[in-house]
Every structure is written in structure tokens, then in C-alpha cells.
Image 1 (cartoon, one colour):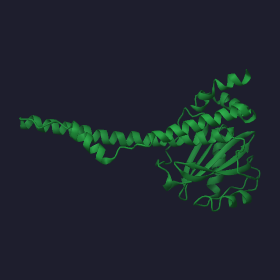
Image 2 (cartoon, helix red, strand yellow):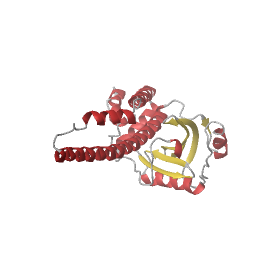
Image 3 (tube, one colour):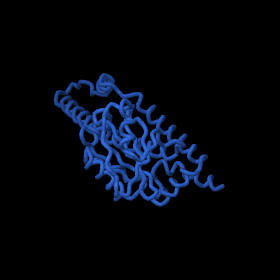
Image 4 (cartoon, helix red, strand yellow):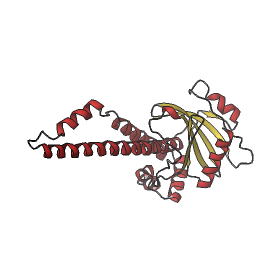
Length: 249
């Protein structure tokens, strides 16, 4: 019965609608409950599969041209009226193009943050959260060589309060990257590293994580790489770990 109450909140948790305290409690529970961790992992995988399926069809420029032609106003006998309709259609198409580009960009950005959160949740729910287990950065960093198409540095953690648990390979938009797990005061923090140019969405320093996200997150670009730091730790801890990475890079 205890797990049933947790499972009732699983969808709310994955949608980022739990409070900060509830999220921490759920994270603690799911790490120690095999049944709930399996359900969480299955639900995250299903969510990602649906997201991938939704991107399979992208309208081509030719398809857009045919649609615009089909809705274009027919020639009118009145020259003045015809110019009016033509001008109105041009304005509508121009506004539509700008709006679709803006909405599409924001949608892609939000999608990236959602997928990063899903990857973090899936790792917490996994029985084997890391492929290379080590607190030594000089062991973890070489493990990624030959597995991902880029290199990156890991910060020195002495007297920082953070500890490295290990790392694993991961994928975002079918792009390979590194996923590192850190611990601070019993909170797990994920650090993701990808090649900036390989990501579908174009993020910048003003790209902030959605407010409804259950986790604190920070992202930045440095040396051609895109970094994401996410977890249920405090915003100050997320910022401090991000600063360590920025200083090391």
C-alpha cells in the first residue's frame, strides 16, 4: 500500500509538478524501491519513445509551398481588391513564418530540457546508474575516450563538498554524450556534456529551464560543448558545481 501511494504520484513527478520537498522524497524512495524504480524507468522510456515518434514527420518546404498555394486568394476582377487580398495573404504568410520559427525554436528548447530531466530521472531509477564507478576523475575521464567524439575536463573536488560517483554514456537527439553523477549531502546531481553543434535546439546563455521543472538546472556553452547540471539539490549547489566545471574548462 505504501508503494501504491507513490505510484499514484509518478506521472505528476515525471511532469515536473511536484513541490521541491515532494520531489526530494520521491527521489529518496525510488532509489530504494525496486518496484517503483522499474515503473519510473519504464514510464520515462515510454515518454521518450512518444517524443521521438512525434518528430518523425517534419513538413518540407515543398509541402509548405503547396499549402500556401492552395489557400492563396483567387484572382479578382477588381484590380484594387486583388492587390488588397494579395497584400493581406503576404502579411499572413510572413507572420506565420516568423511565428512558426519562434514557436518551433522555443518548442525545441523546451524539449531539450524535458529530455535532460528524463535522462536524470531514468538514471536515478536505474539499478546501475553508472557504467564506470570511481571517485577519481583521472579514472572516469579516460573511460570516455573512444566512446564519445570529444574530450572534456573534470574539476578538482577537494574541499568542495561534492563527490564524484562515476559516469556513463548517454544520448540526446541521437547525439552521444557524457553523463556524470555527483553527490552532495545525499543529493544526486547529473552533469551532461554534449557537442553544441550536434544538438537540434540552439540554446544560449538566456535559455532558462522551465519554471515547472521539478529540478534545479543550469546550462552553458564552453569550448564548443554544451553542459547541463541538474538535480534536486539546492540552486546554490547546482551553481557551485557549474562554477567548478567552468573554472576547470
